View (spheres, rainbow, N blue to C red):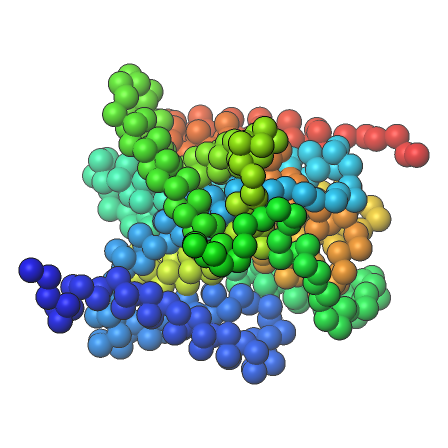
Length: 458
């Protein structure tokens, strides 16, 4: 018989209690302390850092369950992507298809550059006797470019590969530390550079909207189910998200049971569980399409998808992911990794900054700074960080920068998916890592030829 007085019955609720209290305190601090407000650091990151600062206290450290926080980070990533994929995409784009493809190429090539920079640092450190996993530099694009969820997924995978080769590598802590640093770099460096441009008169300050104006169409579309009838509308949205995520589990479990030969065992299967966000996106799009077909054939009379609520679900998932991912870091596991961590994060930040700046000058001559801040924020944190920086100089989204950022996801995924397969190939051996570096150099050159090609002026 279950005893609700047993602490184990409350373990998960305690973890979520810690997360939500930290979020509320961090948001209060950010709203009332000008220094934090001007820094544009996300409240979720401040909440995670708050937990990290309190963890050295004995009683608090016992409350924070590292394993539970990692599980929350993993599932929050997948659920957030599912919620985004289920949305009915009705975007009035003020940008061209070519510009969206070019933006996707910038995203994918920046991932490649970050991975290459990381390997250029970690491979020599390994060869010169540093107790470090040679392929750990590939966690830079996962932490900077993808965020805590992917940094954790591949950090755990890399740790298992290192263990199989007799190396001790705390990949989850290394990857999550890179992700947390990425948020700080994106916010602080972005704000500092923005102020430098303003002082030099190179940045036009646009008038900020006093208040956002919403209409009923922003909250619901025509033909939707009532907000509350026999089942609440929010319950329906959560049910759809969880249904899709259940299908994601069945797909990953099914692939795990297949006999895919040596390639499957060594390369594909280790990546399957790390790609929960990708499977969630694909199945979410498929379910959304199926619902659309049922609506067109009149087999489904009402609209069950609500974009506004799905946005809120995705936003909540990503906030929780950032808090839990940061809180899961264990500084004790980073002993001996501080030098490579500092080098990877610093050189990675510089390379990302100058490469993205160069790309934006070439691709967006009429709004190069708006394009830069949106892309730099995303490529060191998440898309929401890019939007936060963009709103500082383009609060009404008058330039195509916001649309570029939203619509580039599909071409970026198409460009970057072959590179993601290297994440399962590189850690198998040092030779594979060196081959991966060669492939990345070739891919970066190809992207460079496309992005910096000569175009005829109209």
